[in-house]
Length: 438
Image (cartoon, rainbow, N blue to C red):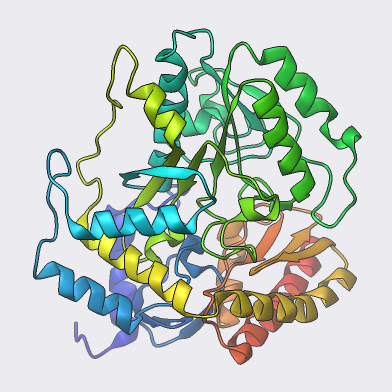
């Protein structure tokens, strides 16, 4: 086979992929369509067969500066000639120190300690272990449960799965073997709606009833992502923080999807002007270049853990604080600070409102909403990804719907023309989907 024949190369890669690989959330015996990628740059993905797609997903919400960014590329090239990896037990290095200091300065005031790990799910695992060990170190062994919001999603590892929605989430088949946690209603008050205390009734009652057992509340601030793209009131989040303090329960904010400008604030907690006790970061941390996550906590959390019967935190990933990942994450943070990211996000939001709002008039669409650089078209009926994925590729865009949600979170560097094309083509495919469902 000649490598000069892109179509045959693509077909060969797909065939070998189906023979050896198992993709996320997929059936290995009945594989979903896959599309071999040749290269990517900015907000464009070029397939091996020559087709070019405008990226609406930022590779699961991570590639905020776009693909193949020269400064991010250079950060990796410079670091790899020094040290690509070294164990973090007993050793340290400048990329990790610089990144930790940068994150402490960027995130809400009061978060002072940074624990690096491999992925967002592991960052949640670390946060949960921190919360549990915090209370264990004080002899309060009864405080061993987590409270989470319904429609929440926090990852695919075991402790993370236990705090995802137990019924409508992706992990209900494991319900009998997961730790039993406490759940409260998803926030019913929308982002721009007026909040009143009635919106907090279930949360408050559940918290008070279980406070002696609760180590922490864990939630996604302002935006419940995979659980339904629910945008809720900052006042709800502010009151949650107040109630946690009042009833001696920690607050874990999972900003893995919302961090680094995606919602219109650098971190979504800023909408409510709160500092959580523990903060989880991932995805956009390295601008989509490497796998890296961080769990930040307050001095109080660190001090209580480190003065307990077991005065060390019992976690240590092999690739913790990988120098390559830290180097590219640091450069990404610097780019955010140097560039006018808030203007970029506001511009994306404005265009999304213009271009996606007409979807409200498509029969079969139940809602259209946008927050920051997140755009959502919610359908009345769920789609089958296997059936519709190729429709988006045929339209020249990379969009991966989930359930009833057809949503976009493009790279923040997407051009106006690319974004308008993305939205226009998305609506074309939505119309096709809705027509097929009638």
